[in-house]
Length: 363
Image (cartoon, rainbow, N blue to C red; front, side):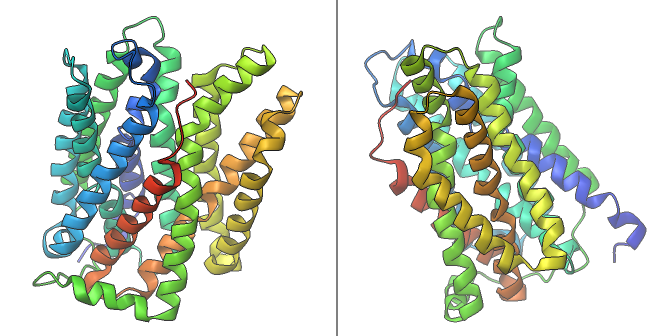
């Protein structure tokens, strides 16, 4: 049994490791203008690159859920193996690749391994923090948001170097995060190991009204959020072109996405007082309103109004994510909590493919 004194540093380690490893997620998007120079005929490369990471993640979560990998095996070891493998596949796009399908394959495999990082990180947190899980997942999902945004910041500060440095840097971060989990985070005191895979039991969780409500709320949240993240640089570029301004696309992509990490943490803390369900409903409603109003602000003549709106959207769009995840974990079968989280993640990310599959790159 892990002592209370030991658990004090567990959450920061999980949060930092999650941030380091998930920096791989949008690494390809951050260097897209450089990659497209090698593939001038590919007019929809942004959507394809993002879709392949999502498809890889979906495929990975299906495999992980079917075999109940994070419930049967030590989730810390699963996280470590996937963090190392994801770093290797991420670096693969730095090879002298002349075939776009090979580039897309590396992004697919990176996404596949991320299935052993994001939901498994939440599983590890739930094994340590049975009470106040909303707060813990708020910090954990906040780390995912910062990790997603971080490649854009790297790109901004390494503009004088070759784009490969962004990829190598994110791979190195993933390796360090993987080792941190392996060495410093043993199995949690509330872990109940499953003896065999039981996907049917996880699917039967949808018969539970509370579980089903949280899961479907999460699906709606995912429909919108990843479309916003994927096309945020494109929206900034489009605004630059149509209004002859010079917004720093890499810097503001980072700042807007990263702002959602703050809202995740704040929402997680507030959920202890106001309840996760109530706050999730408010955040999802405000985010949906931003989506509806986006055309008005995209063509606004005020660049300040446009940027303020994007920051608001970034804040509201992510605040509900840890709240829905905590509700899913709370109402899932204890021995299959990891599989249930993975399965809900799988469906949620599958929805993101549909939500932006018909868009064209504007970069």
